[in-house]
Length: 180
Image 1 (cartoon, rainbow, N blue to C red):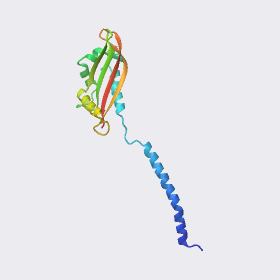
Image 2: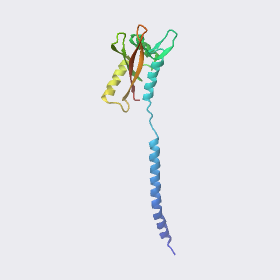
Image 3: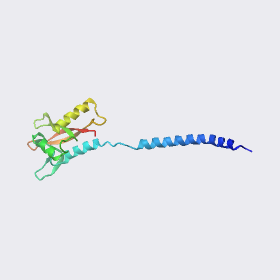
Image 4: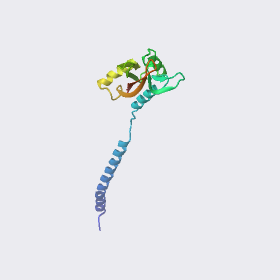
């Protein structure tokens, strides 16, 4: 006759490999689940692109608008770009609150003028904020709260010159979005 204590010891010894297998499978499942779960969602690039698209397609922005109010996307009005009031109009139409600590941008338009020379013009949206955040970006503060992300988007554009002639150019937009 077999002793009960011997049976219990034998059963316990047989459960050790089963428990080790169970722990290994559990750890594998936990690792797989954690690798697919994203705890934080970074939408700063989406914010930057939506800001740029609003600027490119809005009638109250840099795009050329004819007398009937039709917006020509991809055609930049040089008159609007050079106007001293354009920065103020854009800031009023793309309002992010007071003080605006959500987005800042630099627009650089490189185009060929009527006589064939290359001209470069610059304009800002929320200039002080952009310059402050660009210094942080250049210093390498891109991670964590207080950091900033900068996105550079370049477009081939048509420029409506002052005498209603069309010229070719590039519009480079740098958008600075702070990490929250």
